[in-house]
Length: 121
Image 1 (cartoon, helix red, strand yellow):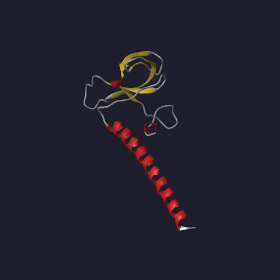
Image 2 (cartoon, rainbow, N blue to C red):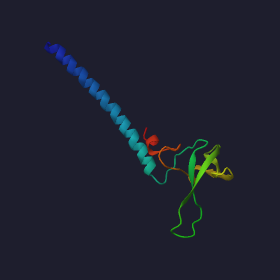
Image 3 (tube, helix red, strand yellow):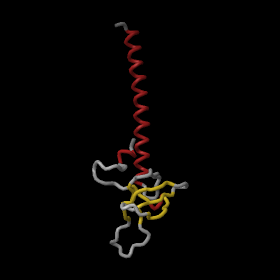
Image 4 (cartoon, one colour):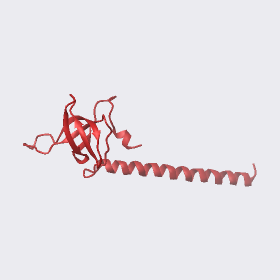
């Protein structure tokens, strides 16, 4: 090959390398932002689908050792302004709750629920 052809090939490879780096950096920054949202206890930007399993934050704790959340519950209906109607597992209605009171339920492997992997895509 002549010197001109090899220079053009090197420039093309350098251009492809720069494009790959920008795409990789964008993906990495997106994953970093999503993990920051997950680890921030003050933020709860979750939206839930009908039929999804959730946990509910307790309003009153009598002892320091009492659990702070209770559940599992099922989302029956999704209303406007991030409010959801929850059902118990036996099908009885529990009530309407705001998204600030609800947390996603993580369960055993293979169950139909959200997982950490779905936040990082």
